[in-house]
Image (cartoon, rainbow, N blue to C red; front, side, top):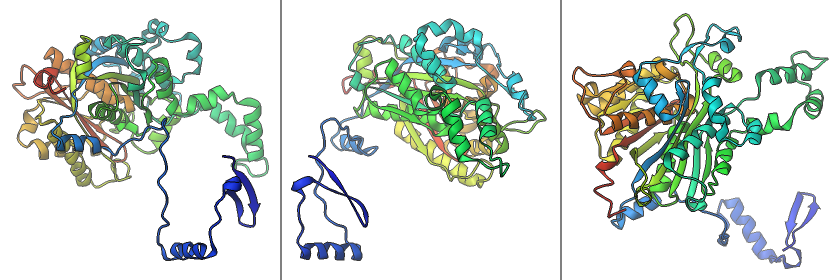
Length: 488
């Protein structure tokens, strides 16, 4: 049906050709009266088009399944992809943790900024170069750093899962990634600001000069295709023909945990069969680093506690347990619970410590209740921000009681630095390896005097800079999938 636009005194109004329905004056007056009195106007329900997928409220379908006595599907981890400062590949990363290696050190690129903070951890070119053949050569010029790390992690995870092109229904395969808001190249932005400064009022932006510079000097590939955070997930989805959900979660440090948790929910509730999920981040990017230094959350060279930035990606292939069993895939773990909370909007250190601890305790309590587990291993967020460290200690003591001090803990950022949105996925994969190998990497472990010889269930904690909290449970796949195989 054609829509004609008519310009009137009140702006543009749309009438649907000759089919436009004329409303009697009495009805028009009645409608006006309803609007004035605050009575909502009734609307006919819109027909749903066939190509629109409607997402139900979180928990809606699961709630109906529980009422009908039908359990949600088990979700297992079948693919692992890690690109970190410790190395490329989940096994390489794990071996480095167990060997006590640390990739944190002085970085010339940070020292060149002139700030009293130069420590970080980067993924070396030597470790990446042999893996670049996994990616389409012509596409690599379109990738920013986070996208490159995500693409490598995704390729590794898919190989580990034994999934290739045509391995399943693309419409039942989704991508969910935690990413950060990406910044424009630092030097390019400085050139843009210098060229756009007003000649009459120094220090002010002249939009005429700015627009002219953009038209003449900025490559659209370098600007739009490398600064939009959703393109990280988009590139991964296109490369692996994932036509189900495609989401990029710009939720800072908890984005990776949220991506894994949402993927777990989508598979458990039947919306997806397979998901590539996790996070990728580049916290060494100059604008990002300078901004966080100004906010007071970066560690300094003279001993101020805080974040030590890094870069990397952690990608997981999650799969419905019955599908993984049917194709003979190896399950490296089972995701058994997820909970998250928004923050209070105050920067770490500004919020009252008791409020943050209480919020985190609620999240931990919720994830333990969902999984019906008591963890025998805890992965701390452990970013060295005093407010975060205190909140984790208080929340664990509140929820676990006397068991809090008897439960081994891992504090892994000392080995690979803070990987931002990639931290939680990378640390969850390390926990799955600890469970699988019944081993604790001693250099990053805080163990009681007599730690258990085996581990069955790990709690992974994630904290954001503005009070956001998330927690995941990963456990040995045999604890549930073997018992509930018939139900799946």
